[in-house]
Image 1 (cartoon, rainbow, N blue to C red):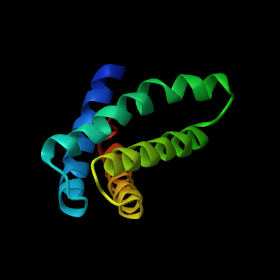
Image 2: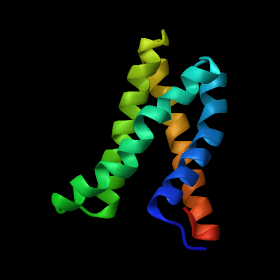
Image 3: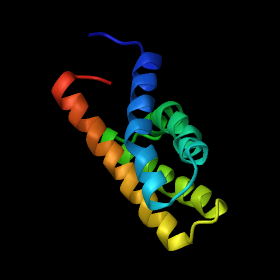
Image 4: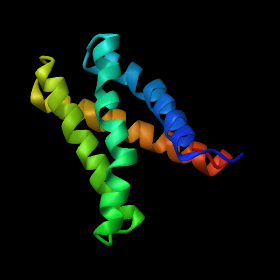
Length: 115
């Protein structure tokens, strides 16, 4: 199956939401809309900003993933803090949610070649 970059992003975004929303709702806990807003803020930057910036800087795929995920961990933790979650818990929950979605995404990519 061949997808456009936008289709790949949309599929990855949907998968991210399926994985992260229940984690944020259970462990943070925040409302569905607030849980949705977390990766809504970070996911487009991870897909559309970090790759070209890292490419221009001469960074490889692994370095780009580390930077992009670090960004997502910190921004989503900061948003959770703004939603009233204690900072230590916000960091831990953001780490759990984002790590879970990266692992699931990589498993889907390894099995089906998408997104």
